[in-house]
Image (tube, rainbow, N blue to C red; front, top):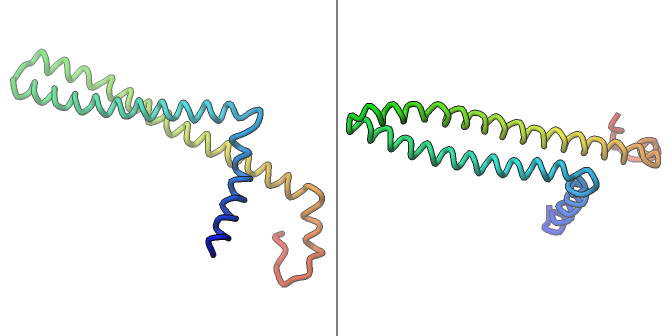
Length: 133
């Protein structure tokens, strides 16, 4: 594949795929993507807090401070809960975008295939290629 073919293929892909990101109902896609960015930033913050928690927990162990140790142990519970909730939200958001993308793409391909009886015109093409059905 030459560079020109690669550029043409990329342009053709972008021309078709960009329809998913434009149009009247795409505000939901953009909102979901923005929410995913917020989830990722929050996951980074929780990991940052885990690092500080780790330092404070082991400092409390080293100093044998039972009050600080208990406080750090109790802080671990919400940190873990938030971390799990953010991981679930991240997976759900990514899978939702993927499902919506596949649904949109399937609809567009089927509409293209049925438009102007393209599927029927394949039977008239004289070549050695097999008809997809």
